[in-house]
Length: 203
Picture 1 (cartoon, one colour):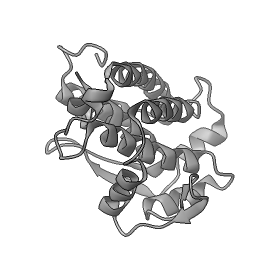
Picture 2 (cartoon, rainbow, N blue to C red; picture 1 turned 90 degrees about the vertical axis):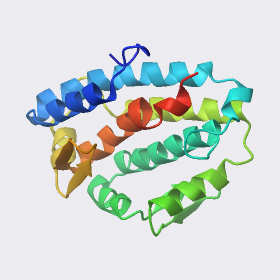
Picture 3 (spheres, helix red, strand yellow; picture 1 turned 180 degrees about the horizontal axis):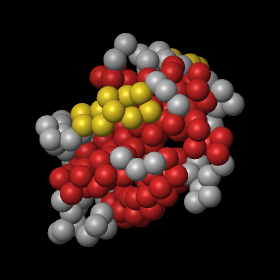
Picture 4 (cartoon, rainbow, N blue to C red; picture 1 turned 180 degrees about the vertical axis):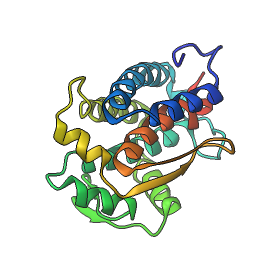
């Protein structure tokens, strides 16, 4: 479904995600692993298709396509920091409050007042990067995020994903989810790659 540009339908994608969210934890996990595999193939295909010239074009929200990719990457870095932390539960709660994002370039932890402030920070952070460098890091980051979701998860990993707090997520006017935040952080990364910024990734 995701890899075919002509037949891609956002409504069907969201409906599929809602169906997945309604499953018990293990079947939900298995379906999300498959969706993640399809999503990352599609996402990396878009990244490799963007030229330096097309990456500098202004996208749908006033940012260049390169900065849109940097935006996706910034959030994925944040998710990786949560999933890779020894105290995942504590770090997850901090991320939901936009606290303790680690900027590896400057070796510092940062808090943000809101989502817009975080997005603006990522735009400044990558403003002078060459497209090829952004693309390489974006692919590496996407693959690293995927590595946290093996086909055969431990019970501890499933338990973490299913722990509170919950997150209310309005996907569209028609679809909403009320799910544990671990699942949310995973799903929203897929939604970023597959749907939300698709118009700016496609050639």
